[in-house]
Length: 55
Image 1 (tube, rainbow, N blue to C red):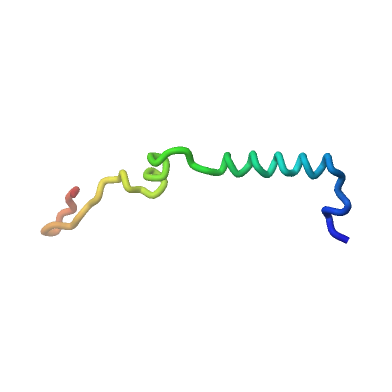
Image 2 (cartoon, rainbow, N blue to C red):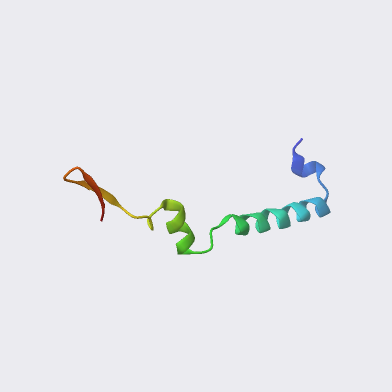
C-alpha cells in the first residue's frame, strides 16, 4: 500500500500547492546576488616584491 492510496484528494491538492510555492522561493532573484555569494565583487590581491598590492 502506498501513501498516495491513503491520502484524500484534498490533502493531495494541498501538497501540490505547497510543493510549487516552495520551489519559487528557493531561487536567487538577481545576478548581483549570485556575484556576491561567489565573491566575484571582492578586491583581488597580489604579492609584488614582498608587498601585497591590490590588482
